[in-house]
Image 1: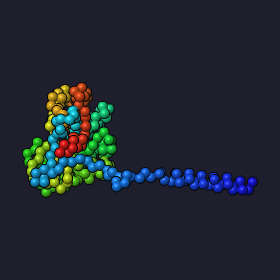
Image 2 (image 1 turned 90 degrees about the vertical axis):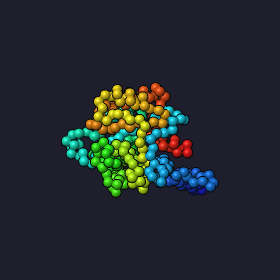
Image 3 (image 1 turned 30 degrees about the vertical axis):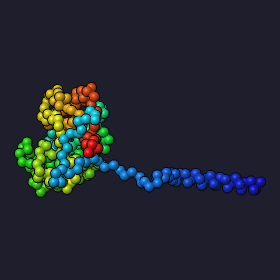
Image 4 (image 1 turned 90 degrees about the horizontal axis):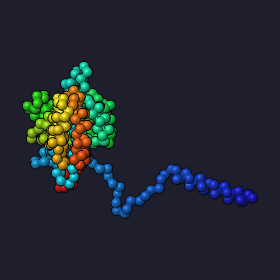
Length: 279
């Protein structure tokens, strides 16, 4: 009887040891010989342009699929804090909610000042896999003279202005802002492209102007987008209630209209990747 009890005790101890090992560490699966685990993928960018200048992207491939990227500029200049404090709304949460309800991926070009004014919204957009956050400068000042009446950033401060926006995104909790930059007003020249070369960004323009800035007729905005979109298009719209009051209503017409035409909505990063894959 004593011998039997000893055998039972040994078996129980062995079982307990095996169970403990199983909970402490999952079995390791060896990688195929000569390979290593895949590295995290980096956001696609374009190679530098002529003379090493910042590359400029305006649209994706015209063949290979009916894709379109809706982009929204979240504008707020460095000097508009007093207007926001007085009640002017530079955000547009209803627009973001509509994009989510419709399941539309989008790229939001955000100024650093906007992110500071609306940190919870910036963080929510940045952490939602449906969206990607890109850089629209910190101050929303122009990078060339004579750009829609905007104040001008001196050449020696252009790089700093872009980097300051990325710092603002990190402070409010945007986890992975994209290495894409949109010039305020879309205004740039060789001097601006040269100034931003060290940042490694790809400058993103557009080929379809939504025309929603200060427009109150949502149908007019929708018609302009629907008439202008081609495969690979980048559409520029705005994510600012005070400056683009009709955008959310226009989107509710644009999205089903383009889907009826067979278009698939993508983020800018997918279009840039498609361009790189063709080179």
